Length: 475
Image (cartoon, rainbow, N blue to C red; front, side, top):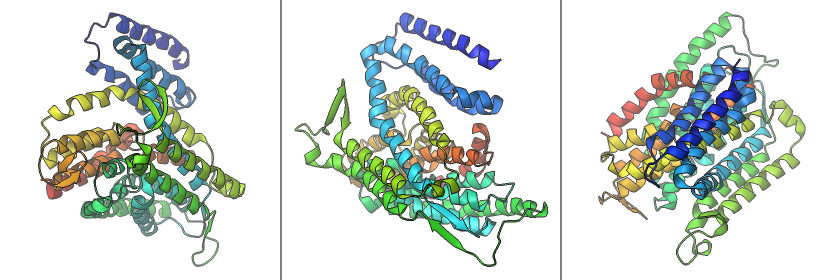
C-alpha cells in the first residue's frame, strides 16, 4: 500500500514546498524555524520506517532522502535564491560530506581486510576486555577507526550467542564515542579545537571523566551480559571451540600500515590549513574554486588522495578470502552514504539557527555548556556544534586555555569537549560510526534496537552516567 501511495505523497509534498517557496514573504536571508521540519521528518523516517515496513524502507531509502532534501531545498531556494541554495548544498557536500564519507569508506574497506580467527569465544569477561581495549584504542586511531577495526571480531566471537544486541549497543557507547576524548585524533570536534590553538595533549586531562564513564558502563555491561550469557548457556548454546586452549590468528595484519596512513591523513587535514604554504595573503585556505564561495581545499584533497590510496593498496595486497571470512559486503557503507547525505543537507537550517542564536542562549556555565553541547550533538553534527559553543566560550573574555579565538576557562572547555564527544552516543545519528556499527551488526544477523529502542538504552544507561559527570566535574 505504501509503495503505491508514496509517489502521490511525494508529488503533493513537493507541490506544497513549491507553494511555500512562492508565497513565503519572510525576510530574505533569515532562516525560519519551520525549515527544520524536513530534518525532523528524515529522522522520523529513519526511526519509524525500518520498524513499520522494513523491506520497503530498504528499497526506498534514496527516494525518501531525496524527498526530504527537496522539501528543504525548494523553500530555501525561494527565500535565499537559486544560487544561494546551490552554494549551500555544494558547501555541505564538498566541505563536510565528501571528507566524511571518504574517511568512513577507507576505514570500512581497510578494516574489512583484517580478520581475527581462533578459539576465543565471547563471554562476559572476554567482552569486557575487548570493549576496554577498543575504548582505549579510540583515542589512538579515532572512534571510527577503532569501531571498524573491532566490530567484526566482536561479532565473530559472540556469533554462537542468541542474546547479543546489548553487546553492540555498549560497543557504540564506549568504542564509537566515549573512548575518543583523549586526543584530537579521537574525534573530529577535538581536532577542530586543536587547529584553533588547543594544545595537542590538553585532552588528556579528560581522562578522569572518561575513566569514570568507562568503569560505570563496563560494570553495567558485565551485569547485563552475564545475565544473557547464563540464559544462552541454559538453553544449550555453546561456543564452537574445537581445540583445548586458546588460539588466535590475525590475517591481513599488514593492513595496519594502511590504517596508519588514514590516521595520518586525518591529522594532516587538521594541521595543513594552518601552514602559510596553504594560505593566501588574506589567510584563507587555498584550493580549487567550485561555485560562489565554495572551495575544495588542497588539504582536503590531500586527505582524500591518501585515504583512497590506502584503500586501493589494501585491496590489492589482501587475499579475497579474508573479506569472505569477514562476510564483507558493500551494503553497510551504501546505507550510510545514502542516509547521511540527506542528514547533512536537511540539518543545515538547524546549524544556521545554532550559529545565529548560539551566543544569545544565555549559556555561561560549564554545567550548561556540557548539556547544551551534548544535547545538540546527539542529533546534529557534533563538530559544528562544538565550534559554536567553543566560539561562545572564547567570547566571554575569561582567563584559561589560550586559543586562536581567545581564552577559554579550563572547566568550560572540558564541558564542551565531553558534551560533543560523549553525547554523540545518545542516538544512532549522533556520530558517524554509530550507524555503521548498527548496519554491520544487522548484516551479520544481530537484530539491533530500532531508533527509539536504542534511544531508550541511552536514556537508561548513558544519561545517568552523564548526570554523574555534570555533578562531579562540571558543577
